[in-house]
Image (cartoon, rainbow over all chains, first blue to last red; front, side, top):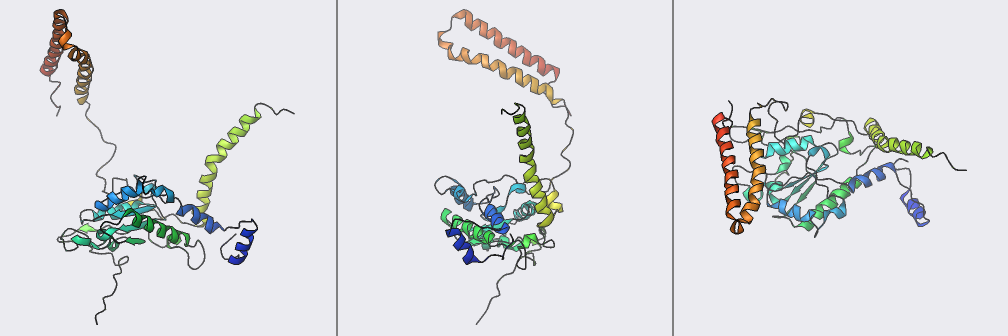
Length: 208
Length: 124
């Protein structure tokens, strides 16, 4: 049955009586959110924390995300774990482009968010969200494995809320939403373009 | 009533067919009704760790290197015979020592011969 046909209260009442009712959307999202396969891909020290998250002490397998894929073709999630240098940025965008929809991005750590302590450097990208859309940001330098797990749970929550049909349909289901983003190229002084205006929406600075 | 013994084979074949086909059919239906495919240049490109691939994957190698490989294999296997010699070195009688020296000499001769034939030079 389709979404929006059943009252939540009625559903709860039925559950108390031992009758479980679900919708296609719930079933689909339930499957998706519990089998997020990340791309095996680390950039700097955050990757060490990502490895720790995947290992037995923190055990990302509890959330269904332990299957780190060595190929973007099979991955759902890109964890940008670490400093993105300008040399590396085109490769990251290309890998993101090669991932099939639906795909998600976690920007892990200060460097991936904004360049972090290397923001003033000549060779560090000031945030991966200049080129690809990011779903969850994790602050920290580096963030602890618990933080990554938290981000993972936030992503699961996001996936759970995505609609298959209707007005608020998820972006990746729309036929005209792009799945690939332009790969930046090396210019004379910087990556060209320095940011993708379709993706990058920096907050407006308000001065008193 | 006992069913025909071959009936189970039919059931087995049926399950073997349905099991892989059903998910593929579901995926096809999903693609048809919910999620339109979005192929693109990068998505269809060869996966090369995010780097653009250079040239074709199906290129020709020169086969001259095979001689080098064969010689390596022969010497690699022969080095196994030297391990017991090295282990038992202190307790060896004189005759055995001479025998292994002759063996080594043969190896060396083989190497010199291969060298002289030009097997160790890379063919241009």
